[in-house]
Every structure is written in C-alpha cells, then in structure tokens.
Length: 265
Image (tube, rainbow, N blue to C red; front, side, top):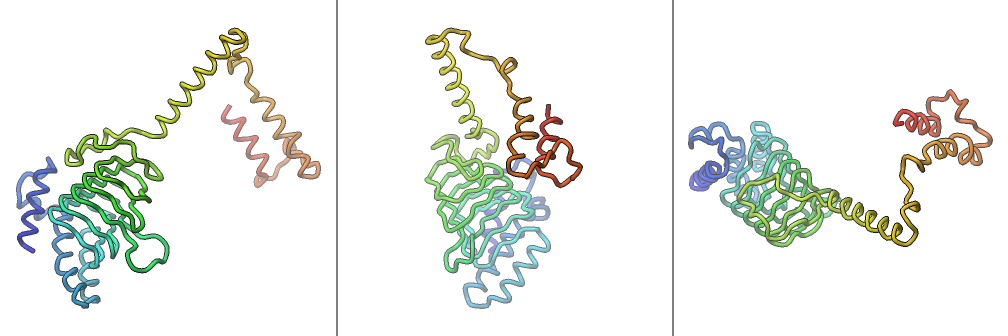
C-alpha cells in the first residue's frame, strides 16, 4: 500500500502543476487518500469481509467526497484530481496511469447483476463531469471530454465528446498531455456541413433560375403567418372553437406558445 501511495504521489506531481511537493500532495489531495483507503477495503472485499470493506469505503467517502466501491479495481498511478462527487461502481476496472477529474461517474445501468460497470484502459483521461455507463470497454490512451456520456465501447487512442459520446478523433493528442480543451465539437461540425450544403444549393438555384429565385429571410419570413395559424386556425379545429387570443387561462398550452413567440420576436 505504501509503495502504491508513493507512486500515486509522484504521478500527481508529474501531472498537476499546482502540486509543489510530496508532503503537500499527501496532506491536501483527497484523491490520494481515497485510493489509499481503497486498498485495504478492496482486500477485505476480496476475502469476503464485505461489511468492513463497505464501512471503510463510506468513511473514505465522508472525508474525501469520492465514492469508490470496495469491489472496484483501481490500477497503479491513478490520479483523482479534486475528486468531489467521483463515483466508481462495484465491478468497474480502472487501468494504470489514468486521470479522473471531479464529478466523474463510472456507473452501471439498470438492475443487471454481474459485470455491469465499465472497464477503463491504461492512460485514459476522464474529464470533469463525464459519465461512463454500463459494461463497456474504454481502450488505452483515450480522452473523454467534460460532460460526455459514454455508452458504447471506445477503441484505443480515441477522443470522445458529447451526449451521447461521439468519437471525434483517433490517435490525436496523447491523453497524458492533460489537454481538456482541444476537443472538436461534433454538433458544430454537423451544423457547418449543413450550412455549406445550403450555400451550395443556393448557388445551384441561382445558376438554374437566376438570383431572383433566392429569397432572403427578411422579405420572406412567415413569422406572422405562423403565429396567426397557431392562434386562430390550426388549433381551433381541434379545440371546439377555443380562441386562444381571448383566453385568460394561464395553463392554456397554445396561449403560452403564442406568448413565447411574441416575446422572442
């Protein structure tokens, strides 16, 4: 246990520029204590002393804010930075040289028994607020972006972002560079692709039918028609003549929709 604690302290000093010396890391980093207390808890759990193991894990949780089930397997040189609200489930496996930031959940799904938590490879960076759920496998040297929800297996060397998690890069920057910012946004990429397609389609229309065929939004905006249809025409057919423009009911769904549209304008 002491050898592994020394390795964990050295790993934090290498990866965290705020760590000035070993004594400061030992006294002020809750992740060190969480992993340190997990070692005897895991030993007891494996030797069928489950209640004492759970008691140790709960004491660790009270003092550090990090909940590691005693059944979880934690690799060497694991750095849990800040650590508050980190949750690692019973059948989770974390490889060597991993970095886990605050708010991370390595959790299960549903009421399945047996292996129901993720397996994390070596050298993985799990950014703050990320959720890795279910009995999936995350490969070596993977980066998981902040707030991502990973529900499927991730191959080695990938970068995953978004909800649900989407692979946006393969064998890009290594996970040990600790960079949590240089991660592409898949939604922004898709929107940019759609925007370029619209420009291409407008150019095609202009070539076929002339520039006058391209109507600008300012001159062709149907906002007023949409509000009118919602208010007086479309929904009246289904609401027995109910006129939302004269409605005083605060719970009237259509009235609130029209109000929101008018406020947005």
